[in-house]
Image (tube, rainbow, N blue to C red):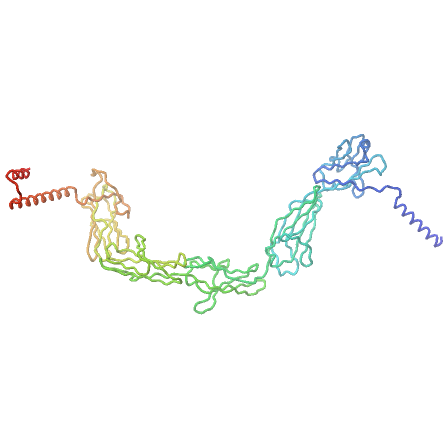
Length: 595
């Protein structure tokens, strides 16, 4: 065959090929009917409008996988029968045989189903089944190790996981509510998916980014977008913040408490920086003598604790930080610390003493970092006697002795004050709190007898009976003696007496004892020691000032004396003739006198 014959044969073959490919006269297949359901629900597959109710007595249903149809269900005379296989127990007829119901839909069921009757192939009806499943709430895991702003490449910020969705959801990353997009050398989003045995997808998305210092508080989260038969939906993860590391640009000192400091406070001095992580700190204080900065010892947290604060802690402090990443040394602004104080209060004279009836001047003084106010108070009562550093005491009495307190306070610093107590001594012989008393006791019991005396010089106390004695100073001029002694017949007979003495004289207290069984009237009870100063196993009762018989005798004597004086006066006037009375008057007088 010549060249022309070969060309003609080639053209004929090409023409025949084009005609065969076009299949002229054959009707093009319509698009499949779309049915959308969620996983686990039931899909209703209709055989289509071409199969009227009179044409469904003989229908075959096929599932198409990879363009290969597989018979799954037969309809004969309106009765259905499943073919053995995956669909055997999930298929049934509805609507008088026009609809095939597929229960418990899974992602594996997403495919084309077709039904075909006795008619030619052109009469087959295709149904495209689409399956959907909402993913679980997305979980997000932040990079807990953090990201340095000095990194040259994008670093992992967080990972987002959306489990058990179908089809694969779309993921969008957000920073501070704004969506992030891929950006070369700045933002990179890497997503992958895993197909579970159930046919569902698990999506994992990793966000990588280069961060700056301003991102230290940035909020990141991911969003999953997915579709259901009801429409488009989305789910968001929680917001996370990734640790951002950046060098410090400033270091400074912080002091707590804020405001004016005073002696006795707990003061904390710490270094702070605007870098993350914070640099290594050291705190130094200027030496008052050498003017050199000397490092102070801090606790495990790098905090310098002054407890209690003293005026010596005042001075210039400095914070120094070493950035471990850049090894750059950073110095803070130096800060002056002032611990306000009031020195010990000095009273002059330090041990004041004076005679009764005289005057005395007390003066107090103190130093402070603030202006001071002074006032004098009586120790016994707390009453304010004088405002100012000087207290004048005039016409002193024995009762003027005792404690006086001077208080120096700094009004500008609340709570800053100091006091000093001074005892004023008034010269005098011992003075007893109680001169004598009676105690009702029981035989053989053990008593605590007490005796209190004051005076200047301070008195000494002794007892006239044997026992165990102890003394307690009430103040520099007062002493309390307690005697522990058993009740014996001898003690009942003699009683007990204590004697207080000093260089100016003596005084005594007498305690009379009487058995409680001898009492005829109910006594008033009290502790053996006066003013509740100690406990006692017995009771005491004060003696009447004198006995009532003595009072009566004195009264009668006074009356007799008055009558005698009256008689003498009348007799005097009678002799002088001043009384104009006759015999009858005289007789009346005599009668009255005799009466």
